[in-house]
Length: 298
Ligand SMILES: C[S@@+](CC[C@H](N)C(=O)[O-])C[C@H]1O[C@@H](n2cnc3c(N)ncnc32)[C@H](O)[C@@H]1O
Image 1: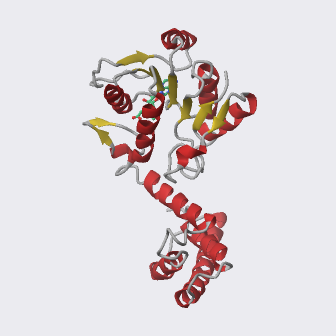
Image 2: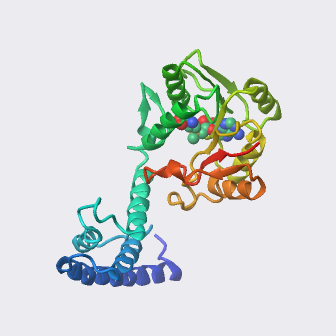
Image 3: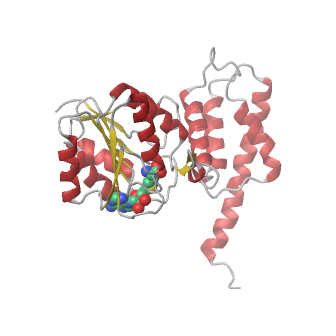
């Protein structure tokens, strides 16, 4: 086996020193927090920083440090959340770390989420938001780019059944066997940005209420092309939902590269008909942060 290179050896030595520093700091903070009621305000950012450093990608916690880390983290808030809500810094740290845990445990979480027997690659908190949105909007047409197994199209079709209105056009480059059959669902096999497909969707939309969900190729370029192609088709008061804006470190999958979040930023800089509806982030964790774009004018 080749011996480790100099940068690798340095990383090992420096990394261990940094871990030790962070752990020592957490131990001190944990001791102070254990006796302090309520938590002194100046300790909160320090503990959040230390916790973030220890929990950062690539840093392994020595086993003996875990109790100190956990005690410091637990000490960040009073147990009575209603009377004493956590500070924004604490809340955001909790949400980010839970989001990363959930996202990166994909084999047991979002890749193993099933709707009535069909795989659906979504977070249940977002699925509940879709239920609320559909109830409010009663869309005539839902356009979904990225079908995969068909679980999300099937879920949306069943919600439409309860409203007794709406149909779904779902577009994917890859055909798949055994997608669920449903009278409200039309499957289209093509790229979502194929101009002929966009025209087909436009004529199906007519003057009805149209909701668009972008969940296909998540590269920045493709999502931006989709936003530009479908923006006119979304009806005023409805939404284009940009799925998976959480990748590229927002806060998950930091190695992804420019993706949906970067496409949203570029799109909003050039199109003032849409605004981010932050109200759709009320459940704290969403796979689509800043991705619920509401059309406010024609
Ligand atoms: C994240 S999955 C869709 C998940 C599905 N909406 C769900 O919630 O279960 C992404 C899908 O997009 C498809 N895809 C990739 N590039 C595409 C493109 N240019 N146009 C349409 N679909 C594309 C892939 O084949 C894949 O099935």
